[in-house]
Structure formats: structure tokens, C-alpha cells
Image (cartoon, rainbow, N blue to C red; front, side, top):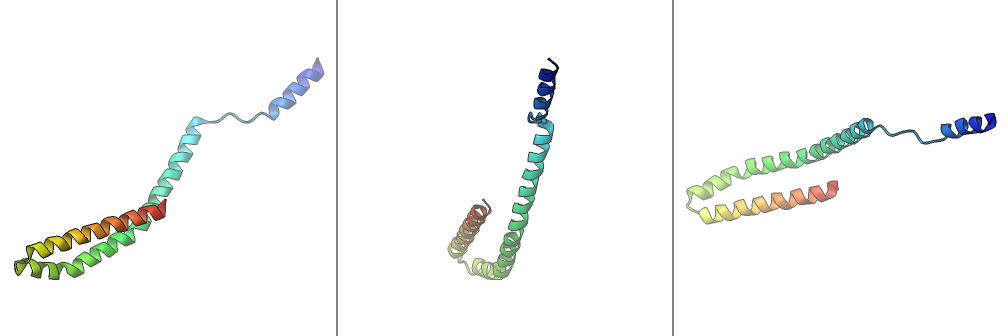
Length: 96
């Protein structure tokens, strides 16, 4: 009987440790936050470039509005919005 107890105690040492749900959730949260910060850091240059382009073309857009070319200005705005949308999708796919 004593050998059985000793063997059972030795085998108990080989059992996998119990999982701590709080530790698992904290680890997953930390990983998710790190991924989020990485994605935001990768999108900041795109945001800065978009702001720079908008700032650079602002005088041209204003001139078009003043000359009565509202349709051209609207088409340019739609084109810029589509460019930003597709650039954002491409950046999102690249991050995945």
C-alpha cells in the first residue's frame, strides 16, 4: 500500500497545472492591447499623409468653388474619399 501511495504522489506531480482564468484573460487582454497599439501606430503615417494632401489641395478646391465649378469640386471630393477608403482597406488587409 505504501508503494501505491508513493506512486500516486509521483504521478500527481506529472499532472498539468490548473489554468487560472484571470491570468489567461489578463494575458489575452495584454496581447489585444499590444496589437491595437501596433495597428494604430501603422495607421498614423497614413493619417498624416492624408492631412498633408488635403492641406496641399485646399487652395485648388477653394478656387474651383469660387469659380462656380461645384460639380468638379464634388467629383474631386468623392475621388479623394474613395482613395482614402481604398487606401484604408489596403492598410487594414496588410495589418491582418
